[in-house]
Image (cartoon, rainbow, N blue to C red):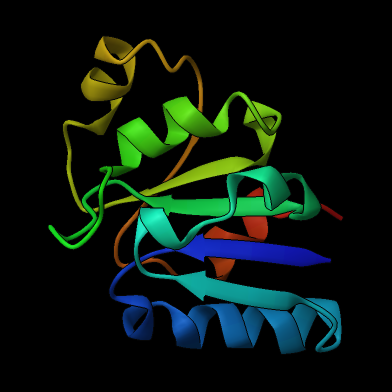
Length: 120
């Protein structure tokens, strides 16, 4: 199973993803982290089983998480997308962007949070 994590501070999530991988997936998860939206190959998004998107990407990214999700909808089923956020206003912003229902994980993210949104 392949997972993409679009997060510029992945070091804060790595432990949760590593533990999830070992405990529930026998080390068989392929986890790829990309820190900037412009480094994502949109044509290949469909190869991932789950895509985690940090809403507040740093200024080094061309798009914030909302804009990335809006663009990604052309390439992947929305069920594959998971929002990662530290904001309590994310539901309101998702509605403003017209993104509809999305799975949301609040930071700090634990391996149990990840397990709830992962397939299988």
